[in-house]
Length: 121
Image 1 (tube, rainbow, N blue to C red):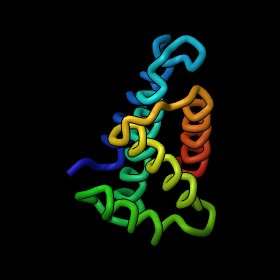
Image 2 (cartoon, one colour):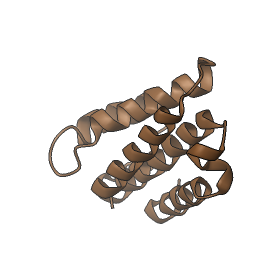
Image 3 (tube, helix red, strand yellow):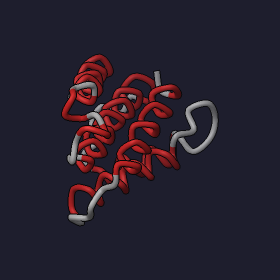
Image 4 (cartoon, rainbow, N blue to C red):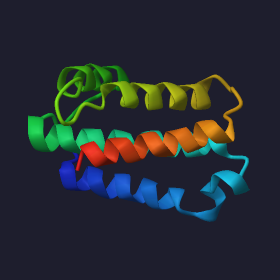
């Protein structure tokens, strides 16, 4: 099972991808992919923190991760439950609902990722 360092590497790779020109909100039509990549970058930050601080190395599913986020991150200095849930929901909408994702939603996803990253270091 991946450990904190491996999750951090994957999160960093996802965040580096967001720096590529094709992921600039004003220059792309792939806003759905911006939201999706932001979510997976956040997911790996969360999984790494769960592994490092709570001994949870195998989350197993998105629903299990959401339970853990609700349990571990709903209060205190790492209170990310609401913003993680929002980013997860937007990513699910982008991936499965075939909804049009606006440039503003992509900008918002990037900001949610920044907030999560600030709280989970």
